[in-house]
Length: 129
Image (cartoon, rainbow, N blue to C red; front, side, top):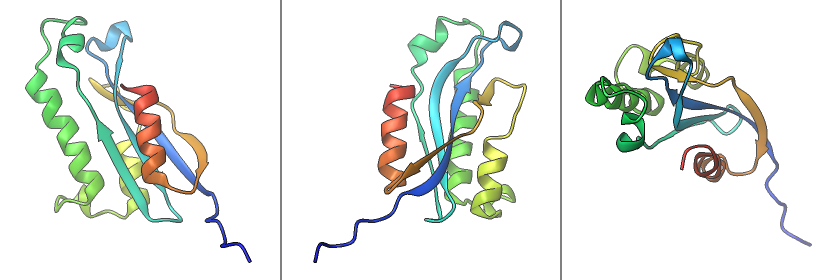
């Protein structure tokens, strides 16, 4: 008898974007948030290409953007902040919520995966790197 293959589970993801000049609606993908309720998984991958980002605007505060992105990763991991103590679904919804700030997320996209960590890495490579 063949071993049972793990079943595909529904996941949701959003692409994290830096929008240097919100009124111009230009953006650069810098990360991905992926959530799988059934497997109790919430992961974030981020990579900020400062040289590429500085081409959008010379007035960006890169240290502030980096701090916001670190905070997103920390919240996803469940830090001790108020937001970090929310349940996984609540944290995902908070992190991926629509904002009109310099850090924004794409619409949420669904998919199926047996391994959300590998899926996060694949989507991150396709959408960010």
